[in-house]
Length: 316
Image (cartoon, rainbow, N blue to C red; front, side, top):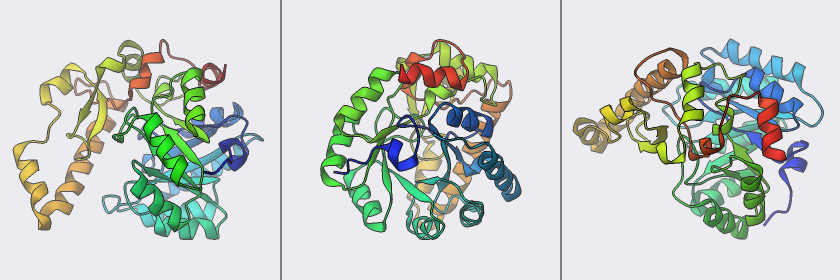
C-alpha cells in the first residue's frame, strides 16, 4: 500500500480529479477546477483535430494556477485510430498527467515518463492493476460498479481495499462520489483520492445542451441503466424513453458479428463510431434520440451550478 495522497502526487489542494467525460469536459471546466484547488482532465477524443488538442493544452498551461493540475485521457486500444498522434502532441506540449483507458498503457507510460508526465491507468480488477503497476504506472484509477460510462463490477469498498492491500502505488477511486460523505468513505477504504465525473455534467461551464444538464437534475440513481448499444462495451446511461425504446442489449446481428474473430475488430470500430456519434448528437443538439451517459451519483445533483460551487459542495 502507498500512503502518497493525491494532493501530494499532483500538488493540488484537495484529493479530487474532475474526471474526463466524452463531449462534456472542456477547457473552461478544467480552468475552473484548477482555480478551485483540484485537478481536471479532458478526453483527447473531445478534439476533432490534433491542432485543436494542441491549442487546448496551451490554453490550460497558460491558465494553470498554484494548487491545480490538468491532464488528458487517452483511449489506448485499436478503436482509437488517433491514439499515437494524440500521445505525441500531449508529450510535446506537456501536461501534468495522462489517464489511460481501454487498452495497454505500456507505450503511453514509456513516452510520458520521458517527458516528466505522470500516468494513471483505469482498471477494474486486481489482475490489471498489477499489470499496470509492473509497467510503471504512477497511480491506479479504480473504476468501480458505481462509475458513469464504462464501469467495473466491484463495489467501491471491495475494489479499493483489494487494490490498496496488494499494490504499492496510489489508488484513485472512480465512481459513486456525489458529496463529501462519499469522498470521506473512499479515503477511509484506502484511496489516495477520487475521480468525480457525473456531478460536473450539470455545470454551467459544460458545453452540452440544457436538456442533458436538466436530465441529471431530474433523474436519479434508480434511473441509471447499462447499455451495450453505444460502444459495444457495457456503458451506463440515463434510462430515457428513447433508451427504453431501443433497448440496452446488442442486436442479434451485432452479437453474431462480435463472435467472428476476423470481423470482430471492424465491428467494434464501426459500433464505436456509431455510438460516439449518437452520444455526440444527444449531448450537443436538441434531439429525441437522447442517449445521455451518466452515473448514479447524479442522485446528489439538484440544480445546475458552476464548477466552483460543485467543488465547494464536494469539500464542505
